Image (tube, rainbow, N blue to C red; front, side, top):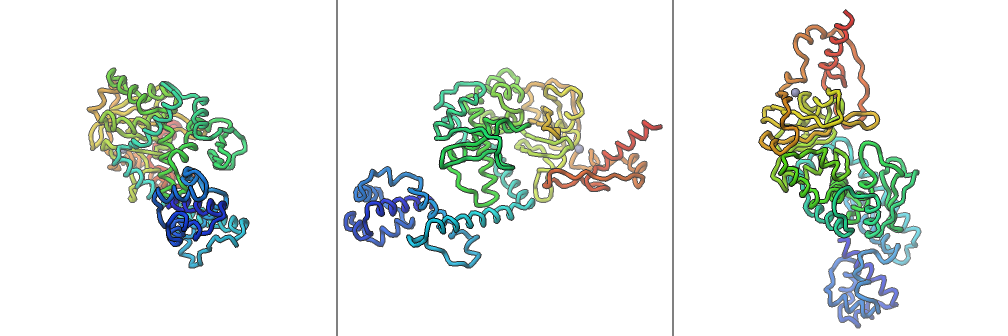
Length: 478
Ligand SMILES: [Zn+2]
């Protein structure tokens, strides 16, 4: 659609430059004016022979017609207006479509397109209610589960880029990322005045990617940010039309950044060796490629099933036990709400994701076997903090696959019967008998609006934690 519209625009543009009418062109290329008009309006695809004839008639090379960019700012605006007027959003208003003819001044066109952009932005914002967002998120997670969290086409693009700049192995340097940006026609500029909430800004007109002057604590390194910004162009993203599109693009740019920072070939070679040594560990993978623990763990979900037939689960869990992000294709039963949404649900406190928080020494990974109603899993978890909040990153595999992993000799074994509430959600009866109706607590408001509050007597406060806290302190005061 977009491609034909642009092609039509370019033909009209060069016809104008050549000072020819439709009839005159028709005579020279032997095609009816009505056909040419349809082509100029992006409603019909011309054959290559006709394109060659048109280029000849205009006295320009064929490549000038095939360029995918709009020929001028005016043409770009006309295309954008045409697209905006064809959306359901606009049709619902019952207003006539404007034809961007020559009488329409540039300024007016710019204003109308600006209003369309704002209309779409507001519609998207309104659509992205927590409910809609959760639903779209869940659909995406289930779709990625079907694909074993693997997107081979993006792996391929990342690998090509890595091979083109001659990167062999190890951590990618900022300098190399800068060279990649150059190849794609971008210059990376660090600024300290990015708009609020913007992680990066890309100026397509002048080929610049604006990044903050330092890494954002707890994640997104500058290399990843730069790669994500480039990814939109590499992957040919258009402005997202729906919240689901937006989520999909975000997933793809994150995947692309990972496929460059941990290229498929190098990553698979590394993991193949680790598996041969029966010593697979997220921390080693992380250090070999100079990325965060979370990025390394997520990348393993992309590769372990697709290339090693090892099924696994991944969890990022906050200090309070709620899921920030999760994935599984190994059958571990992740906690979900009635809509199937995972984010903000609480994982069993016997899982490694939460058991890891109870450790005093957290400098290395924590290993445990977790018995669940779905089977036994081997899990490794690493804790970390982002300024205000602590979190854990878990990668787990079914018991049979534990033989390939470091830490399999751990003697730690915990039993979980969640979602059975007596496992760890409901307070033990003796504690309940002791404290029911004898205490009061007020909740701290949850930072993440999407998170549901833990179910308990006091919204936001987990009864069991409350009672245990009370008991511990009551005992201390005796
Ligand atoms: Zn439990």
